[in-house]
Length: 396
Ligand code: LMR
Image (cartoon, rainbow, N blue to C red; front, side, top):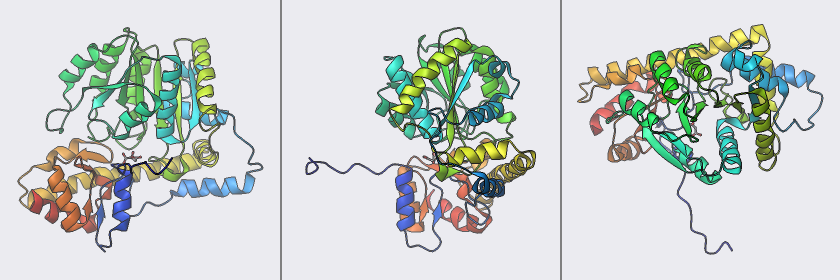
């Protein structure tokens, strides 16, 4: 059976981490995978998480299975974070939430649910989008297509093109939007643009789906939910996938969620019954530890406020280092003006570097970024800025 199997190509993002780890260079720089790094280039466990874990260690009484949809307290905490505990969508029971193995697991659950219950539906993805999006849905058997999102040089939004494309999406299809910190471009719609997006999708039988993996990484937990709120207000149905990988730095705990909002509470419950089938035949029920951390942090005033401070610290460093990079490149006489990077949010931007330049940076300078030219700006520090900018100027 295995003799005829040919090796598959490495994953464009996680495969890069393997190459980076294997690189012996002492001053290598990783701008590849989307992991936050502090000013020392480290990805520490948040203090709020450490304290929550201490409590869990002392009070955890069993390792018995969680329900298929996860701990009800987790779903409640996620809904409160997304919508606010008293939001009409929550109060009316129109939202059902499952704890999933992070955001990728949530996307796959949606893919399985769509394939099993709405076969033939097409998922519309922004151009460009996260490299794993098309693959996740292909694995689930859900066809995907692309709608216009970024402008030609991927520095800003082609808003007119986007609205025109969204207005053409056939009824019954699903449109995926990045809730904030668009991956890979860092380009987000404004609050006014979100209103227009929601109006364009509403009333046409198109279901919006938010990939909301970076809440709190752009401007604030509430500001970043402006798109979610616009869609929840105008559209009768909504799907939201979230992750605590980034905003609680719980990357390897695999903790995320999927929320389905129905037009009625009854519809939402019916959807939930099918989503539970999709989960049961995949991973059965979610891993407990990350969910317990999120419940503990979100449910305790002191831990919650510590979390918000730590999250603000990560966000401020990223936004600051974007400016430092653009200024340093300008000071070094870069032929390209990188000021466009300062308007972007979250970890990612498309640098505009081509495949050849990306390879030169990797081979000559041990600087790693995704082949598409996507950079994780959180990998930049004051300490590596000089070496990084010199190298980029040299390949431009
Ligand atoms: C990324 O885009 O780098 C992150 O979302 C991590 C991943 O799983 O690809």
